[in-house]
Length: 305
Image 1 (cartoon, rainbow, N blue to C red):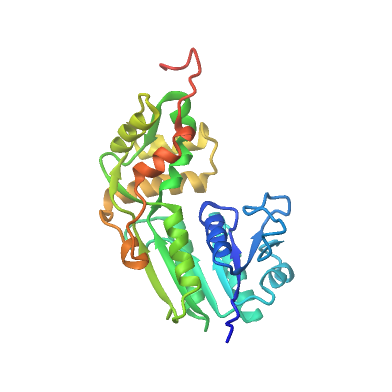
Image 2 (image 1 turned 45 degrees about the vertical axis):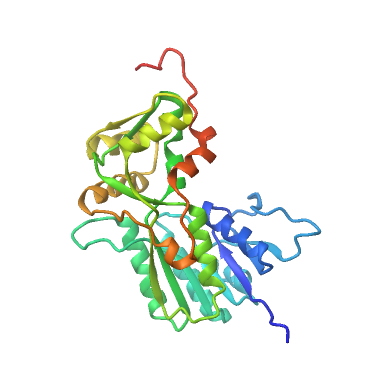
């Protein structure tokens, strides 16, 4: 007897993790619906005559009616929205509509639990969202990854232009996991034949790495001198807000993550192998594949400043 495959809705389908979730579900023949916040956004998987199981819908995350259309006639939902001060409201809206439309499973990309005496504002947002899930009757799983390898792409400007990495974490190490591994784990739980039992899963990569070590690795892979410049938290925040022009909440988040690495020892081994029964991707592989993003573009006259 044929088994009908579920329809899976993917929020955050254009991001590093969400687009890979889309790709993997598509490769396995699942009916997958990507949700776009902007109707003009480029599709992560191009539509053509051979790609008949992928579709897209645009939705304002604050619109009940548009979210209802996005979740209509679906079975499972991958929950990931852009990190922002609106994240709690947006994801709670999605959860509420998933309940209303009869979705039976949610896999949410969350964040690690932080000790109560350490402030990481974004992690607190995720806890609020998880609390809403816990009060529901939906079968769900919260994935709690450490830092993404791909988050290093935030540093490409200063690396390419000046050969420098700026931060405030000193000699502390941070654990990194490849977004493709996170996506594969998400798919593992999205399509699992077993109930998820409202579980939370810590996701860690193969090693913890200092910024000094990252500078050496980037120097090698780009064949150019790249150095890490450690500055105070206050100076780092000022640099992010005045020179990088980041929103204050995002600058605070980046600084808080550096302070977290100093105050809480991060894992030095992975959880990927236990879940997927294979070794995790390693940082040096990611750097080799992405070396073009970090290759220096000197600005003559400013290079040595």
